[in-house]
Amino acid sequence: MKKDYFHSCLQDRLQYAQEFAKDYIIYLQSVEFTKKAELEFYKNNRILFLINKILNLPTNTLKLIKILKSRFILSKCLNEIEVIKKELKNYE
Image 1 (tube, helix red, strand yellow):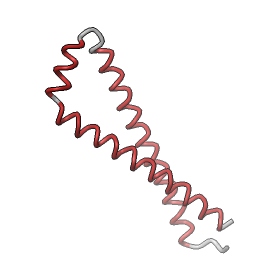
Image 2: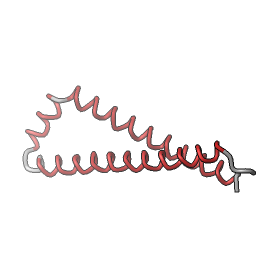
Image 3: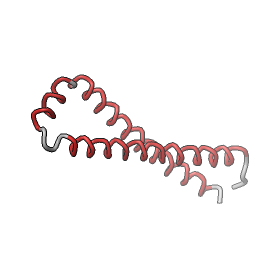
């Protein structure tokens, strides 16, 4: 197929989606690191850990929802990257 304006738009979109996915992967890695650091901090203080979790239950629930949403967005973005790559192969 002849390369046209849509091809360049797809290439730009692919580059943007790859950067977007990279940023989300870094974000999810930082969330996991924070969780590990928190567990290490509360290692010797189980009661304090439980009190903290109970008092912050609404906030922790919202954080969990945000993390699940981020994982969904990342999987959607990775799927979009694959579709764009397949479409770009049609131009070759």
